[in-house]
Amino acid sequence: MSSEIEIDRFRVDMPEDAIADLRRRITATRRPSRELVTDRSQGVQLATIQELARYWASDYDWRACEARLNALPQFKTGIDGVDIHFIYVRSGGDVGASVTDAMGRQGPGGLAGIHMNLLVTALGGGPMPADTEQERAALEQTKTFRATGFGYFLEQATRPQTIGYALLDSPLALAAWMLDHDTDAYEKITRAFVDGQPSGGLTRDHILDNITVYWLTGTGASAARSYWENGRAQALAAGQPSPPVKLPVGFTTFPGEIFAAPRSWVELGYPNLTYFHEAGRGGHFAAWEEPELFATEIRAAFTSLR
Image (tube, rainbow, N blue to C red):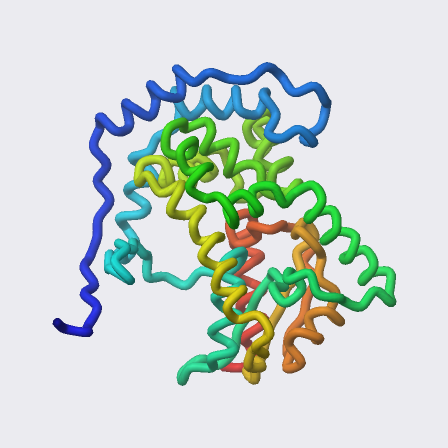
């Protein structure tokens, strides 16, 4: 048996009946009564889901998203018996921060430096300095996230198959699950649908592009399993020191991130910090919300490495 991994080109071509079925399911969804509070503390609000459902079923154009995807270099391969679809383009944030961190610690040949906007070294729950006002504010933000914004993470890290049944059966369950991330992103998405006021790239169409890809490919459960698998990997590595990042590191703090990482925290995780900047706008999905600003940060971080 050959040890080489086969990589095949891929093109998106969803059948029309799959799109029709999606619209039918959206229209037929049973919805709960309105939440009993005026904020998001009980979860994704009914008004947001109602407007999202209306737009998704009547105005959203999946074929436009499909055309944009097919303009990119797409491939499929198999890894450990699982089919993997990937797009070969440069990209940055969220899970990508963990990937970038791992690449920096491996230091493969040809990698000149790394840039991140989510401080994964502070997400493990270990003690962080709280001497300055900025450090104390960041610490409070991490506490708030673990207390009120950690539900999706815990469910996917412990019971991904359970939530997977809802994610594969109901488009609105999938949408609500994906919207219920961090407060900043949720409020911006709500404004895009309810008030017609998108925040940068967080438009109604772009948000639904993301959700619809998960729906049409049936990957809600498999995506959730990545949290479970990552948790097992971290448990196996517990107590084993990670190799240091010896490459130059650039970091951008965006104000709407889950926590605004202070420079002192970044330097603690990456002593070889060569670029640090606090952006004026943008949140957890900065590359999506503010692509031009994000690209400017990437260029600035790597200017000295050219």
